[in-house]
Image (cartoon, rainbow, N blue to C red; front, side, top):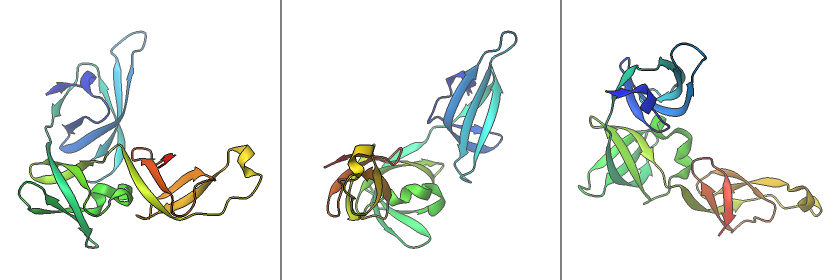
Length: 185
């Protein structure tokens, strides 16, 4: 059990039988009375987002997740298939676990999968990744003074807003947490 004052972004806990991961945290102390802790959480089993409010002093069940390094193999249409680098065992991960972040997956890339009681429920992507640009609009002369951007498509299907100078064939670095362009490599 942990005190709700210890909840921070990324902490996983059990509450009313649901496995929840904190996405946002706020602590409010009114002039009188107990402080309230409001957290936005994602249910790791269903993928739904909700807001939960606790009073200061409440306790929740802390959850320890097993972390293992896996290699991404392929998408079979229903599941993403990963291979455990230690035992060479293959794991199938439902599309609902990765959701939109599946656009960051590359064949043979390594990432951390987090499991609870043998069920893969979360993952950790690298902070930044590099992608090749396969589609890009042409820049129009005179647009550079306004700080304009354009949307490009990468080799994995990811769409990213970039400056106008990025062209087809360029390699770009993207922040996986925000999906934003960082630099041309």
